Length: 106
Image (cartoon, rainbow, N blue to C red; front, side):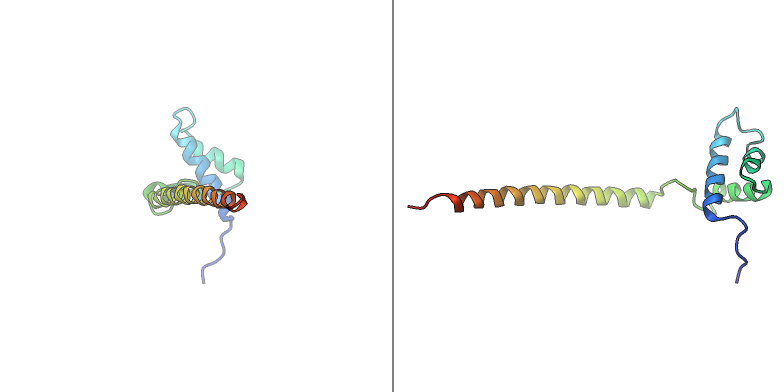
């Protein structure tokens, strides 16, 4: 059984995301990992390892949707549109038939 992590996963994700964002900006790139590690009270080499794993593709980027997630959202949005359209049709039909029942018959 592996030993429990010294840092909670939420802290790891947040620190990794902050470091990756800081490294994208040329003005904050130099010393970004060390600076963020100090701010969050994380060992700099631990943060460097987390960032390297994400950048090399060995771990998912925290807070970034994968291609399969994006495709799944598109499918769900399409299904949602179809269901809303079906509901609108059913509402209109029920209103029509309710009006028919309320009319006096000859």
